[in-house]
Image 1 (cartoon, rainbow, N blue to C red):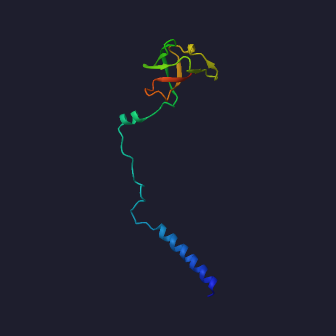
Image 2 (tube, rainbow, N blue to C red):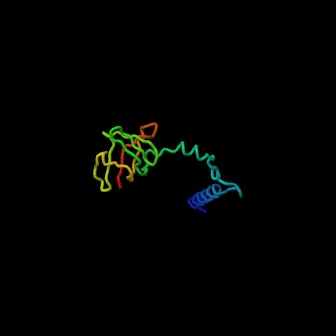
Image 3 (tube, one colour):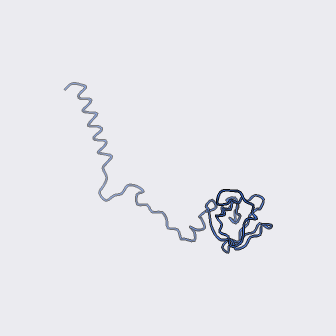
Length: 126
């Protein structure tokens, strides 16, 4: 056999040998980390860790006072700044905060910078 054929045979046998060695796994064993389950977290802790300040929430306005910037949505007292809060209609038009009324359905975004998560920055009126 000539030198070139010997090199090709050696290269092919090396690649086959390396491939077979990588595919070898003990029967019944699983790859590292495959069966690792996250630590169980109770629902109260999960709720406390959840940050939904950037999610669109919805509800019905119980009461609103634009002068003081207070609003109650589904029994929860929240706040807004009448000069900076944005109010949008269903068609995308800009409205005044005075368009907010009791018993009105509303969707809203809370201010993520507020540590108490009680300040609303955007209202959407459907």
